[in-house]
Length: 59
Image 1 (tube, rainbow, N blue to C red):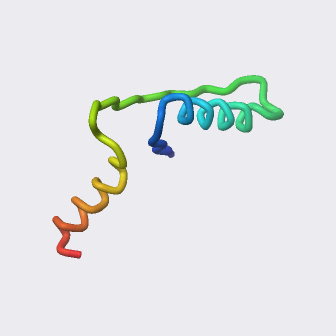
Image 2: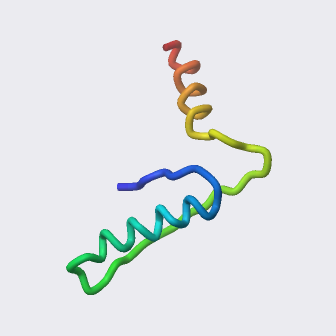
C-alpha cells in the first residue's frame, strides 16, 4: 500500500501532485501521507537497498 519514489525534490513533488490529482478524480477527498528520507550524498538508494538484500540472501 506504499509507493517509493526517489529523485530530485521538484521532480518527486511533481509525481506526488500528479498522483493526488489522479486519485482525486471523481472523489471529494484525497488523504495522503508523505514520508521523506533526505540524506546528503546518497543517490540511487532503492537499487543499493535491493543489492544489499540480495547479498544477504546469497542471490
